Amino acid sequence: MLSIIQAAGWPIWPLILCSILALALILERFVQLQDAKVMPPHILAQTIEATQRGVPLQDMVQTLDQAGAMGPVLASGLRCVADNPKVSAEDIQASMQMAGRLAAQGLERFLPALATIASAAPLLGLLGTVVGMIDIFGAHTAANNQPALLAQGISVALYNTAFGLVVAIPSLMFWRYFRAVVDRQVLAMEVAAETFARHLIRMRG
Image 1 (cartoon, rainbow, N blue to C red):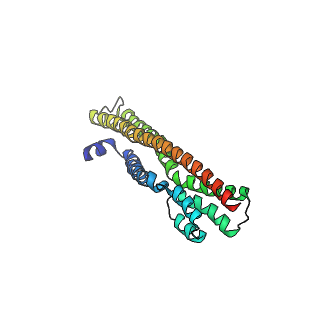
Image 2 (image 1 turned 180 degrees about the vertical axis):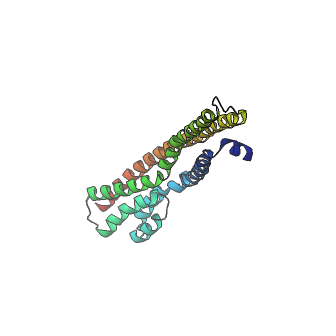
Image 3 (image 1 turned 45 degrees about the vertical axis):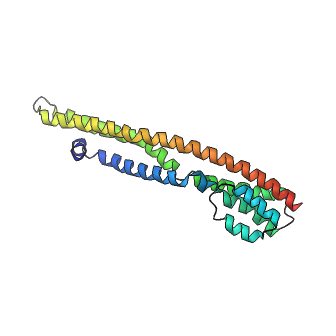
């Protein structure tokens, strides 16, 4: 591996940094986007049941604020009712929608960075290719034709092109995968939030 890095020259170092960063982002999103962390099992049913049993709203709000990404969305609705028992249905829905947008933004965290790496890696590989071609043409002159320099230029060009694609393709695949996961989770949160908002409106009335 070290010999490949040496043969590829300095243009490969930005690609190595991109690969390390992409791997870190992929692992972080795998951990944080687990369904159980985003929307703990039965959280909606348990919260509805707790409100029907008359559990103090402030206690539920504090518990829900620590319950994944969905918890704060439900807590925002409860907080509205706790602060003003006569709050309007529109205010409840608006508060939960704002909390939902914040939760969705949290789910999308680092995905733009992963998409940027997927887009930039081929360009960095192309940069290495251009640098290699410059070395080739610089070595190949009428007065100075050195095979070793030609081989080095070709190595820089090919290794950087290949490594750029090796970094970009998995990054793009995982970005699309995480994008689909986030879309599915956001939809599930929207459905749960709408159900809970209707429950709060009925309970308030």
